[in-house]
Image (cartoon, rainbow, N blue to C red; front, side, top):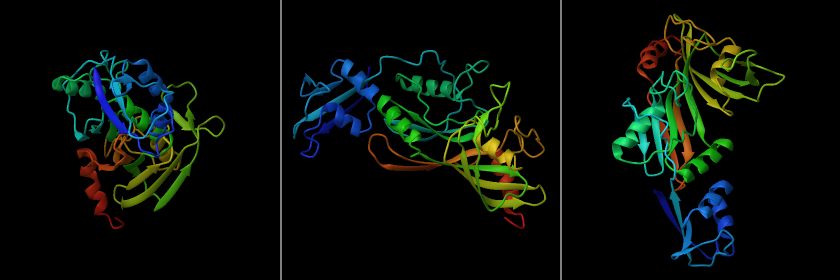
Length: 305
């Protein structure tokens, strides 16, 4: 099934490159170029197949046809709430609810974001391959990008690796944090656990988290903070904030104190990135979930808020 077609008019500046060189500069991975080369008329000029070694000439029109031969049939379409922040023919940006896993796993076969997206595509009569670009923990809410075809997935994944997707979070943490802080501590897996993470100076992976205090509730001893990540380690914010004595309340793994809120109040608030096809700069924000929003006004009314 044809998922996407793109045409490129070759300019004098583009001429003299091979098809592969031209596409690689457009963000196509080597793997995707090979896939297109092996797809009948995946690459064409006029009505003829264009070989990846073909030297491009000014005025030629290179047609790229992206086809989806597979479908995420193992993901069961399930009618679940799906909040769409933005959609076009290349990407889908959703505002994930807290408590919803991203991928099906043992014990979570039909209650995940993947199931909700599968239902959405089924209702539109479209084929579906699930490609989530950024990851969020089950209990973390907020913005997440889903690529709608191979090129979008390729370009956005490369942006993630190069840290070109700016992610900003909001969280409520215990205690009064400094006005600003940088946590630069490596994170690794806790011994004997496949889930827990910890600060690990010997075998952990580099992790850097910036945070800013937005306000403080003296009565409840809670801070409302903004966070920005330089890396994307599993449980990074939760582990880092706990390591400096400011854990997230209601975090069943690292601070299971549910007096004020549960699960942990962590929200993917803002995403800034370059559109994978058009090259436009995109920026999205998502409102806090109700449980966090109901607590934040109390924090903002504090003497130091």
